[in-house]
Picture 1 (cartoon, rainbow, N blue to C red):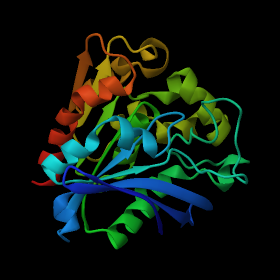
Picture 2 (cartoon, helix red, strand yellow):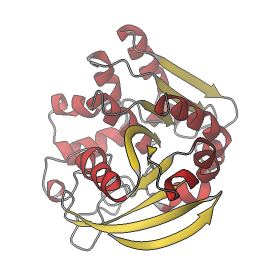
Picture 3 (spheres, helix red, strand yellow):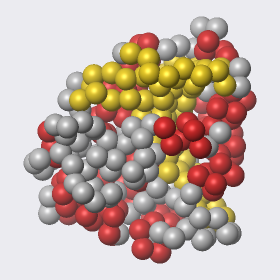
Length: 277
């Protein structure tokens, strides 16, 4: 690993690192906030944050003021990039496919299958790297926004026992049923809709082996609410399966980081309680 940036913040340090990913076959960057306790060498729980379409590791660490909340709860916060990157990595001119739009799944269709294995990266390779090189405990939480909210929900549901907490802002809860997800899934996974179910939170809730409580915030003025996000589908699926869900509809809020920053403290409290219990 090589350091890219280091900044003092709220008594801790915000870093950006780069490394060669064996899973993705390219160089990757991720942000990591180390609270004061971690800088002293104490092992701290880790919250993984997955960002949305078009984002890099920079969006969350520069826009959300997450460091303030991480310092309060003494959590390490890891924010990876949203896809593999580089000249040799398959891409698409559209913003919602290819680089910047990995959808946190493991692609099976060419040309995407060569590099687009973001689920293996987020759930396996990156935590192993973090736990090797930083004073990180094995207490893990996961959260995200939009495409990253989809990623957080799916990753937690696919790996029972690996995470102690999960939350999401404006998640794509049922990608199999909305245009963003249908486009990405067709490209990355092919036309077999049975394969899509493994990457759809609404489908996964129905057969979940662990009842990890879900916290979801959604703005009512989100421009993508009706076409792409549809939180009512997750609400109905959780009700049918008896899966614990706290779905908060926030009047007047949109899809932006203004929304995330407004309620991020609640999410850190949710994760801090679970990760330090």
